[in-house]
Length: 124
Image (cartoon, rainbow, N blue to C red; front, side, top):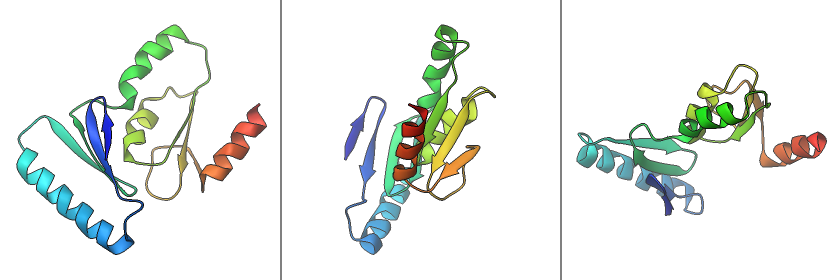
């Protein structure tokens, strides 16, 4: 379990694949049932279920950063649903890179963290 400033996430990467997936689905259904009329969002990510306050996501800080650094180039990496809000909010000059498979709003994709490390080494 991971406590976050505006929510909580249950990771099940270390669980048995089949059992973890079944338990995660049960958790998602239960959360949806008991919290359906509350201002929270349930996100299903890669081996994680996240519960967060409605409207609170990684893109919320972006306007303040852009105001302070209007000419900076932004490069964002992410691997799950919680990163998609940020990808969608980036300015057209920025680049978003999704790590792994799945649908994404990122314009670029790499297969693994190893590839990200190679990209970053190339930049420095």
